[in-house]
Length: 280
Image (cartoon, rainbow, N blue to C red; front, side, top):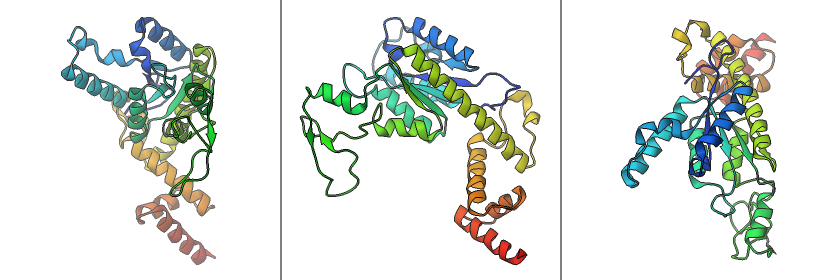
């Protein structure tokens, strides 16, 4: 994973979406990369990892190579900008992009989303359902994520969101926003600015975590890989922040020591609670 330090190269951002299927993907990706550069990011298109696949006959072997190339590219990037546009005239977004959101979430990569379809998910379904919806009650089991059903009797979940909650919420949970504008460039620009802000906050957290671990990010060879892995660093930072909320007033080394000797944040909080009583 690449370090997110202002003194080093621009953060790499994966450009996820159905743009690879456009008639002129090169022109669209060039425009996206220009907007990214203006936001202080370096856009990376999926096709950038597929240069050696040009001319290969379509079929399962090629599809597997494309999937692996995309996963490798996402691994190399610091974050991603996600297109949530409906695909092939349907309500839902491109399924491949949805898979990438799940992969990026599992890899704890920050994301921001954008779409040129300003309708809510509920209104998308309304159009697709011929303007006919019917009210419904709560489910007999589990959560009920909607109050209406479409013409096929399917529950309309995530009604107020731009897309399926299993896609939009991981994006928002990563720290980025989801932006809908009629003009795709405006929506994309807002998403790029949002992701840049998330990456900047992540950089600050990384610096804090290295300080807590007694490490200096500037000592990384050629500014490449920082030990330990950034995802693990962010785990430590998040746990420290939770501990600060549960047990305020301790020093950074106290939080670090409690986490080191505990199997969970809750147990670390108990240790600090005992220490507080001993001090009092």
